[in-house]
Length: 385
Image (cartoon, rainbow, N blue to C red; front, side, top):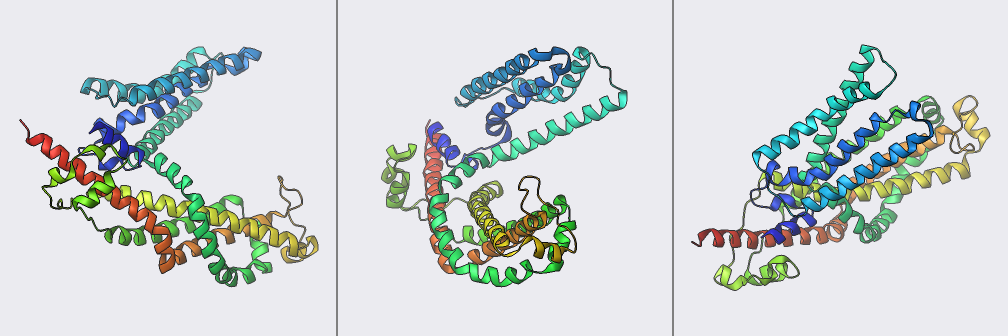
C-alpha cells in the first residue's frame, strides 16, 4: 500500500491516496521546502557591511546549512513519517515564529539602528513573504504541481510534433488576425509609450482567458473518461506498478469492480495535470511566435520606418541596443494573443484532441484503474480480522 501511494505521488496524483489530508500527507512533504525558507532566511542575520571580505564565508556557511537541512529533511520525508499532534504543533509554531524571530535577531546582531517605522515595514514584509511561501507550497504539494511540471516537460518533445503540425495549419489564421495590426503606426506609438508592467498585465489577461477556456474544455474531457474496471483491464493497468503482484481475478471474483466516485480535490488534481500540459504547450508556442515577430520586425521595419510610425526617435532596448523597445513590446503582445488564439483553436480541433489528449486520457484511465485495485485491496485488508 505504501509503495502504491508513492507511485501516485510520482504520477503527480497524490490526491488519489485514500484518506489524503493536510496533516498526514501534505505537511510532511512540505518540510523540505519549509526548511529551505527557514534556514535561508538566516542569511539576513549576516552583517554584510561590517564583515567585509568574510561576509562571503558567512553566506557560504548559511547556504551549506540550508542545503544540509534540505537534504536531511528530504531523506526523512521519503520514509513517509507520521507526526503526532505535538510534533505538528511544534513544526507550525516554529515556522510561524521565524518571520518575527529573524528581524529581532537581526536587530540584536546589526550595528546599525534603524527607525521603528522601518522595522515595522520589514517585519510586515517577512510575515507576508513567509505566509505566501507556506500557501504556495501547500497548494503545489497538495496537487503534485512540481511532479506534473516535470512530467509535462518530458512529454514536451512528443507534444512538440503535434504543436508544430497544428501550428502550420493555424499560423495562417493567426497571421491574418495579427499581421496587419503589427504594421500599424498607432500600435507602435502606443507600445513605445506603454510601460512594461502594463504589457505584462495585458499578457496576464490573455493567460487568464487561456486558463478559463482550458478549464472549461478539460472538464468536458474528464467527464468523457470511462472507467473500464474489468479484470483484464485492471491487470494490464497494474503492470509495472506496485499493484502488479495483486491477484486481480481473485480480488474481483471474476467480475468488474464498481467505479469509484472522485471527490472535488481529485477532480482538481486531474484538471491541474491536464492544464499543465496544455499551458506548457501554449507557452512554447508563445515563445516561437515572439521570435517570429521579432525577426519579422528586424527584417521589415527599418529605423527610419520605426521613427515615422512612432512620431519621434524610438527608445532602444538596454539589452539589445539595436532593437526598438516598441518592437519587443509588439512582439510580446502579439505572441501572447497568438498563443491564446492557438490554445483555444487547438482545444476545439478534433484532430488535436485525438492526438494530444489521447495519451493523457490513457494515463488518467490507468491511474483510475490502479486506484480501483488499491481501494479494493484496502477494503479486503479491512475486512480481515
